[in-house]
Image (cartoon, rainbow, N blue to C red; front, side):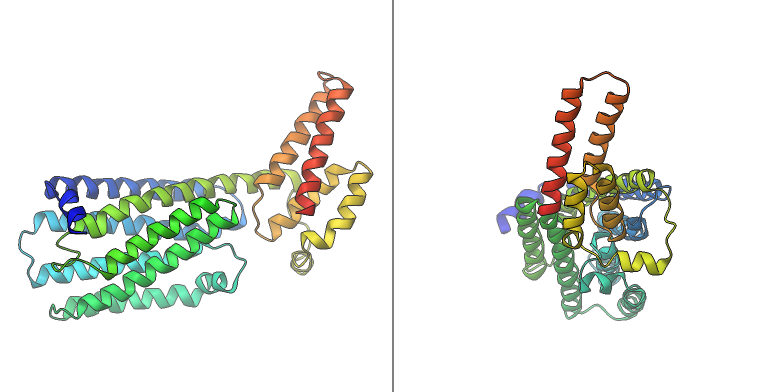
Length: 330
């Protein structure tokens, strides 16, 4: 660990300036992605507020890095600033958890609940007042440690679960390892504390985590685009909230036999539409079914324009059918 600290703290001030400015860049990028998401449709837009808090966390990383550059002595007022900003970063991560929610488990309903949000707001306010008014003492490290470890543990769970659910198991394992390393840095800082070696314990891990955050955000923006495409396919909802609520209770298995019969009758367009509606109202990933829908539409258009032979048209249609059957029977 000491060797790592030596490597990252060579010419530490220059590195810290670079790390801090990079965190500011990440914050600006995340704010930008949140801004462009506001014009999109889809159920997941409501979770976009979590992206703001991730951006705020990176703005706070920038702030704490700049404070460390311009404040020479680690005195009591400086320690208070560090503890306040470090805790607020963790609060931002708590508030960002709905952004990583799949809305499919009890833990998702907890972080999406308004009481969770209000509770973290209250905790952040108490944290700000408490550390600003108290005298600096070693026991403050334990409070910072508890909040930091809890935030990273929850973040690691949500991110890793998302990757595994999307079939990216190797990336999920890598994410788990990364978060364990970050938690380890929180649990076993050097004798001088994490604020003395901020490059190693805070800014360095934050920049590594930004890769995960940006990748997740790109995927989220892409998913919103798929929701817009779903609206093109199925149009606006005309059913009542009660009817949509009842429909959302169905699963792929509940419709399997019906869809297989429709496929046998070559009514694949209807099957595609119903799968999109089901997945849309259950807030599930639409990428695969919309790719199938796009392929089928392109094939039908080519046939109408008479730019492909009937044999090629039927061959492509059979491939669409195969993809539908695989999706239904998985």
